Image (cartoon, rainbow, N blue to C red; front, side, top):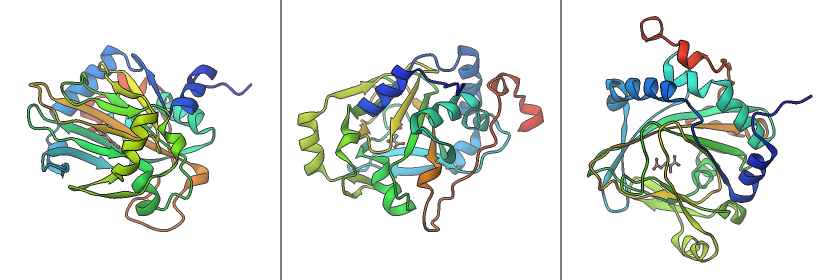
Length: 257
Ligand SMILES: O=C(O)CCC(=O)C(=O)O
């Protein structure tokens, strides 16, 4: 029997709505470990890009593609996430990117309305919109600190043209404004360890962080075997060397740092 990581209902929710939230997908101990690592990791800050939004405010993102034996990779290579992505895309998946999204207190910038496939199609040559992003809350994401907001079911619209918006690429607002009349806006508030899976054509954004709390999340993205880039580009796609779920708890800084 072909065992699935997700239930039929969870897969159906994703197909219908373009996203799926699983609460407590990671335990408190697992997320404490990730939080401690990320909050004290100077490399994340050193390697982070500053991305300005349309109004010039900065959000930080630290992104990489090759997975190793570091703690972050125990999540991205972990069976729990990889099997869920496989179920959602209904075929074998490969890793594209893992990134840590850092919205700092009071000043953290917005992410404009976009679809990830808005730029993955044109910049990275994925012919089909068969990619999924998995957003793990490292700390609490609330409306006040700029949680992700999604337009439920908007992945059914298909890819919308994307234009420059600050340092970002944003969806053509004429289409977004129309989409807002037809699709429910859902503010995805997450507790640490909750995980949001979202389709690459789902319209999403997040507002500036005006609160005194930071908002940190890790996003691992996977591409279906049938949607590998058809042309070389700056991003590569990597096969996954999957690890068991206990790899997170067994991971030790001294051996793998
Ligand atoms: O972290 C955020 O608020 C935005 C993330 C996002 O839009 C993305 O990764 O595509």
